[in-house]
Length: 347
Ligand SMILES: Cc1cc2nc3c(=O)[nH]c(=O)nc-3n(C[C@H](O)[C@H](O)[C@H](O)COP(=O)(O)OP(=O)(O)OC[C@H]3O[C@@H](n4cnc5c(N)ncnc54)[C@H](O)[C@@H]3O)c2cc1C
Image (cartoon, rainbow, N blue to C red; front, side, top):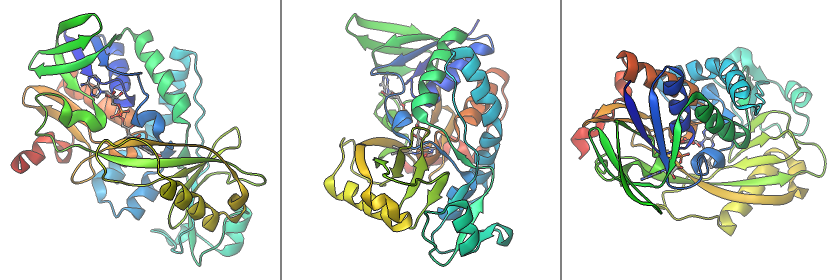
């Protein structure tokens, strides 16, 4: 049986470990911190490929793979809930975009009255639209469930830092000392991918995002709402997640007063009742950014890579895990536009 060593137990590492193990592979996954505790649980949890493509002027490939991944979601979270015993609620009541434009599809445009029927608390800014079938989940539910289901499928988790990578093996440093783990290497190290020794030529870099959680005193949005300067994501317990900054500040952790004030202000400008909401919690995380905003997925210089999922890594998790497992085990082609080698000329 082929052995695999995955570097990084974020959502992507664990989802791929689960997929490979379910297909009969022997998988060890190495994490230096707490599995899932980085970008994957910092995420707001939006699953909104059409909205993201429209707002960020994305071309066909991200819309296509985002749509395919969203379509996999209901069955995927169902299976993960069963395997882990940790149910994951999926909310696909649509996303409202209230930024003053009427979106890509005239049939989806909302009048002020229609907007007020759907989302009574949202301010009409002269144009709005509804993206049906899209929505959100809570990554704090999803990520631990994926970790547990990867274990249940047979993946072995090892604690420690990968300090060297070569074709067929990694060096693992932990409190027990140094160990060499043999197997086909798969780098799923998120924003730290280019810091993994041997992978420095991959142009993945951290893009910090700050997030604020509010407790409204009255009404809250019922679905994902995009305003001009922020997005709002509901939670089942009534909190509202407000996101997010996009900051090129290296690996500087933490939140800033200016950003949190700015997010609260932006939230109140799209949903005025949130002006009075209590600030419960703020945090930040590092998106794995790439020069073209697309993931890096494929074989590169003797190792496999699945990284660079940037703003949409939660959305892309089921599709990425399945596409990577099929590429690795069955030699299925991955989209050529995602090959890590597309950046070789840069380095
Ligand atoms: C504020 C914010 C909001 C977001 N909102 C959304 C959203 O609404 N929807 C969406 O789809 N996406 C969203 N994202 C993006 C999404 O969170 C990421 O794309 C995704 O979580 C990346 O997952 P990952 O597994 O690649 O990385 P991570 O979760 O960061 O995991 C990488 C892991 O690798 C480990 N690691 C790194 N180097 C080593 C090493 N040498 N040895 C051992 N372990 C190592 C790290 O410790 C880490 O645990 C958001 C991100 C942020 C920061």
